[in-house]
Length: 235
Ligand code: GRF
Image 1 (cartoon, rainbow, N blue to C red):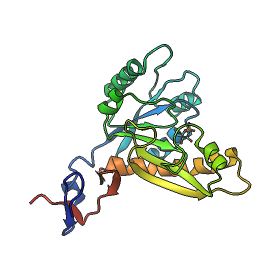
Image 2: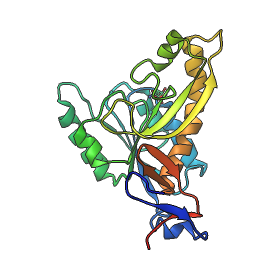
Image 3: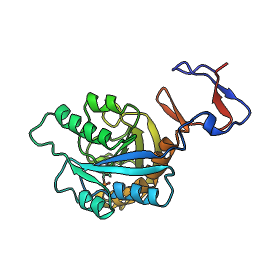
């Protein structure tokens, strides 16, 4: 069956995944970008520590805000941190410094974790398909700020969270994973946010583990897990 990017897939005898991803067992280095309290950063750190994100380490935590509580938390957890303030600089100038720091630390994947800044094309090109973001709604519903408030105001009965690859669109890149949960009649923005956040912490670790493993393919807009029996047709 033809796929939009020209790849074809068909069932085959299972082969070791190493044949597909020769580098999948190498240690991957994560750069985490934050602007605020950093609970998703801490959840990723915990998941790495407990082996739920195998073959990964946190190389650097970067904040664009000096008062981000997540910076202190990252230091307490023993990570290298860097403050790269955005004040008074163009988006690209700021992004160039951030990309330089990520490269200095040999970062393979960038995890946006409450990073309240749109990325320039320069940044996205530098880490194309290697930048992940977490958003507190079932995208494509309610992109942008205050997603939980938007969900309550719209009266949806289900909401949740999404991890996606970052492209030039606002919260619009290919979706890696989602968790859904009901919006209760008694929910406020705060109570809904708190329940979504619990799901975020689990979902982000799962999504990062998948991407670090390399056992996925992006076909059009679809991020699909590669199963052992599905290998690319090369002959
Ligand atoms: C989370 O709700 C995340 O989905 C959104 O910003 C919030 C960050 O929270 N992008 P934290 O800083 O990780 O606690």
